[in-house]
Image 1: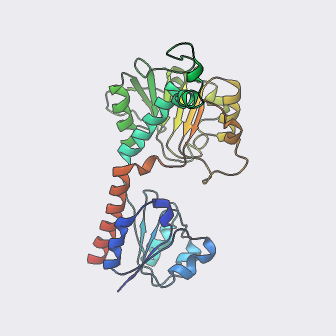
Image 2: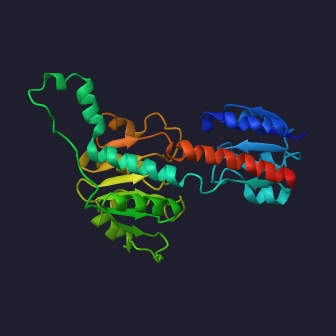
Image 3: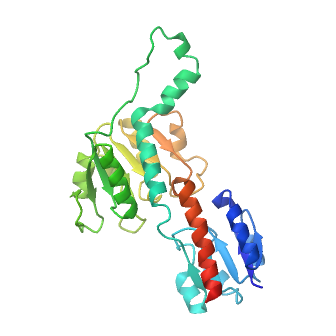
Length: 311
């Protein structure tokens, strides 16, 4: 019977579906695993499940029993892939499970910033509406997607899903490619500079690469329109967070993000200075985890393990 160890169950939320792994081997689950406890927990394991626990060359070379690393995510950058291959350790990830989830979250951030729904909710709950002389209160927001240009940075699977949703709301969609290679799609291609200058809403769906690192910085942010909404659901590090924080203090743009360069958020982060601002929304890396997408992820992880055991 193989030993199966899940190292960071807490990153998956409620995962009762993974109890089926008890029928496949000796299954042990840990909420989190610090680096200091990693070796002790996996030294006898044949199969390891991890979301964010790092497997460097140093640790991999100490694990002669390890046969499979099942990544409970798409990215495999937490693993020294070259070393794993050399040692004959198979690595299986899950791709394409969160397309609709991330697209919905993108739309959620945009709609909240356009409507200023948090402001109006607080207005009512504070009792201010009780004191009003009229039936309504029109103080902030209430922008519409209809008629605006929605610029997409990275027209991959998620970018195309967002483009479809934006079009349904009446937006004119344009996109740019970091590789400068237009696709055969119905949306217009623009250079990054023109996209930033022309768009009312911009959402980022690119991976973090040397070309996208700090793509949005003080120079490129200066190209944005007044009242532009910028959304990052790609990767932290694509947006220079210090530059965005400074820009939000001095110019009227709106910013929503689900990712930060360092996660969890660090004490003293510049965005915390803007905690009372109605022009910034921050969510704790949850765009991937909407109901059906998380179920699909966990089911695929189970399938990956079952397929490995059959081989």
